[in-house]
Image 1 (cartoon, one colour):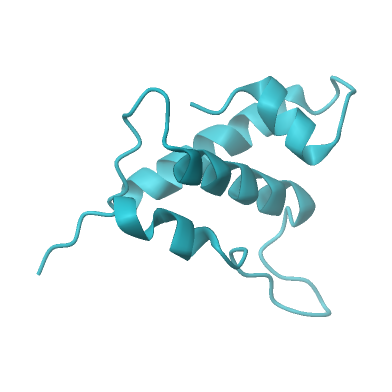
Image 2 (cartoon, helix red, strand yellow):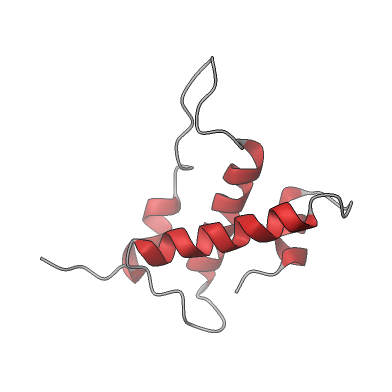
Length: 91
C-alpha cells in the first residue's frame, strides 16, 4: 500500500490542501491496476508495483484532465513495464 506521506513526498508537496485529492488518486491508481489483473494484495507491495502506483498518482496529479487543447495525455511511460511481471495473463 502506498501511503499519503509517500505520495506527497513523490509529488514534492508539503501542504495539506491536497491530502484528500492525493488520497483519492492513490485509491484510483490501485483500483486501476487491480482492474487490469495486477495483484495488488501483497503487503508490502513489490517495489515495482509500489513505484507504478506513485507514477500513476503523479500523472493523475499533474494532468487532472484526460486531454487539453494542446495534446492528449497518456499513462506515463514505464508503468506497463513495471507491472508486466505481476499481471495475470489469460487466453
